[in-house]
Image (cartoon, rainbow, N blue to C red; front, side):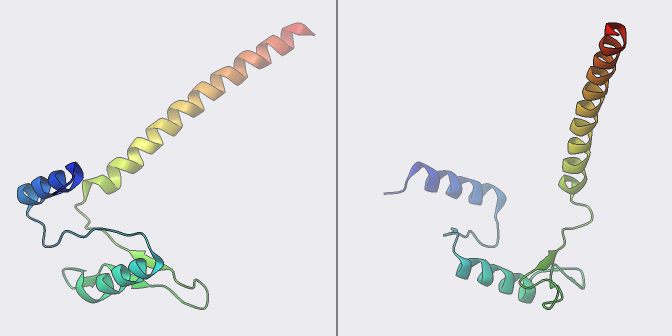
Length: 106
C-alpha cells in the first residue's frame, strides 16, 4: 500500500513527466553515484553540468552549472539581496538613533 508521500510523488510525476523519479537515501555512496551520473549524462548543449574541480586543491569538490535561463538562480539571489538590504537599512536607522541618544546624554 502506497503512503501519502508516495501517492503525491506519483501525482507529480504524472503531471511533470520526469525522465526518472529517484528516492534518496542520503548516503555518501548515493552522493557519489549522483555526481558520477551527472558527470556522464547531464549536459546543457555541449557543456557538462558537473565538473570536477582540482583534486589537489579541493578534494571531492564539483562545479554544478544550471541552465542560464533558470529563473530561480537570479530570483533567489535578488530575494536574498533585498532581505539583506532591508536588514541593513533597519540596522543603520537603529545605529543612528542610538548615536543621537548617546550624543544627547553627554
